[in-house]
Image (cartoon, rainbow, N blue to C red; front, side, top):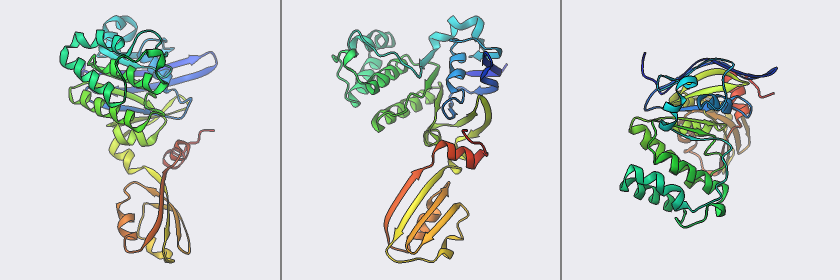
Length: 298
């Protein structure tokens, strides 16, 4: 059997008459950053809880490091760093007492790195845990999981609503873990996040696997609403040469359109005109799903 960090075969979980997930077959390679993208209720957390053995499947198989989750969970868990979606808020102790016992087992250099990570995001080692904001508590949980150098890191919506500096810290360190051969599985409802960090992305919708995209292909499908205002009116014909523009609307000197993928051709085209205002915004995940996969949230 080929060695894989994760393999699930026809994994299904039902709750009475309600479906959690159905027939999910996926593989995650060592040294891969793998994403699960979906709207709320798509089945992302159910899938991850099945991986961690927190709930049992209705049918199907879960293998972690080629070990059966149902029979060999005690062998699997020490090798996994896991941050669940609903993390308990830390109450007792300080940042130092929370991190130090784990870090010293890995050696003094890891403790220094943990201290450096905490300092980068403004965490004082003597800060009581019950004083931490939810965002600081989340990043602290990540640091504790990361310093164990797990073979597999699982992050369930961990970066959602975090400040940019926290997100950058997480992205930088999971890239480092990947370079050391670790696998990372993260779930998100942000297509932009998946495009930025993942090697491959599984798209979930209503408990089913829609497709698995390579990160480069997902980036080529990225969708942004772009609006520009020019100093003088421009002719609509100039934009007909750009096949990655959709819903083009031009009124005098104002352009509104959907940009798919690479923005470079549009930037080069409009550079010959004086642009006095420009906005670019990611489309909602519901709209991305409708345009790319023909599915709706409702």
